[in-house]
Image (cartoon, rainbow, N blue to C red; front, side, top):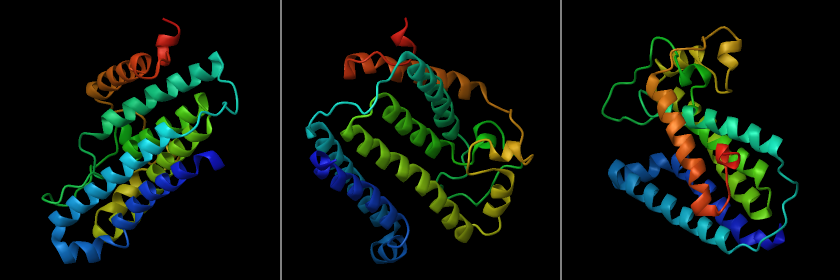
Length: 230
């Protein structure tokens, strides 16, 4: 991994700045410059470190993959990416985890659709995306970048629960009791039932999945998803 040292540093900066600004520094900085100023600073740091990470990724030397991705692995990854796409699209509507400062803290009566699967469907969609890309493209640079994204998503989701418990002590524990951090754990434990998906979840996820995998052809010159076999 020595050849990707600059990328490792940039990835640590990207992930670390999110954690530091979202948790220990959020309160002091927001009190000092206001919520709007904090949002602007957070966005600026996130964008700057993201660009830095992408630049280092693109400039990292090419290394041979650690293993070969055969058609069986590609088929598994393709199906997992469809699940990730549905989780992402479903998370965009009525997600209690999304910030909404102007609204009272409320949670649904029952977890349905993607929220029955996990209370952090967006974060898990990012993590699944990262893990799938490591699986089929296991080069040093790609492992570093995607591992950083997976860590940010999954650790960020866990830390979000801790923060929400403090900010919404009357409502968030109730939502945690109906849902699960780990996918399908609440369903397996009888706290939620699989179902209640909206047509937009399925249709939007399918469209995103088809479009994103097709874009690998002009963007990365790699046939991904079902386009490998079409």
